[in-house]
Length: 437
Image: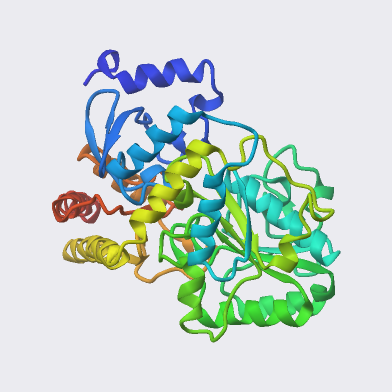
């Protein structure tokens, strides 16, 4: 295809003249991997078609929400019916209550919930609530975990535990991040030292239980148990960011996986997004009644949103939760995801390419490393050039994975065994070129 006939390229050129970088979210620009972004024209099931009409097997699924695949009939029907009744009211609806009941029914740590419109909004509000409920200012986050683009969370690690993080974005004053302490994921000794130094001043510890923005790295059970113990001892709130993992890795979300190994385990606050909206802009945060009642209009912690609990978004989310709650759904989804990463691992081994992978439910990640990383510095050891070759090799063969080394992937219930076979065959062909190079 020549540049003059590549509609993706012409759209990208038009977009760059009007939108910074030509995209409305940075990773879409392909800056990390090079090349031209694919402009999606339509999607159905496990596939999307770009502006040139090429079909791709989709392993990002809108970065996680499309757990049922694109255009699931039950979800489409619910959204169409809701749209006929009105797009937005700025007033309460019964469906907001129904969605809250459905979420709380599956996530026992949440007794009350507040619906919002994005994961960033939910994470930002959860931190404000934690500070308001505890009367403290300092927070802990972990290197490589992403909790949205709120100022206080755009932070990289400082030079030591006695100092706090540094902003990773222009426009974030040092004063805003001075209360954010950044630690290494899965480092128990550092965690204990941080609480010893700052425990009485900490409002919360926020963590992705399975980090999806350094590809796929799960918190070890001993590390998570220590997080819970230290938060309890020092009176800090344990905040689970399950925007990505919520209802994606299990019906009870990632916290239900840790509860299997840690008796009585539960976080104090939970942040949800993606799957609960089914592809519509919807997120939530929630926890015990005693904490949530600090929110306005009951308490002094202010939070509001014009489109919160949007009637079309809640219809989409409710229909999605009904479908994924059917018996056997997660068993089948998990089996399909495992077949993908096992196939990829076998293909890499056959071609002599270092490879490691992990998955849970419909979420997966892989690395061109012989061992799975446990934190961000080890993730950074992956060869970016080789990943870019893999990315474009798969793209050329009709397989779409995240256009960045540090992003997890997603399988939907719409992916078939044939899709997996086609993906593995494409990957093996690319692994062969990597081995030869």
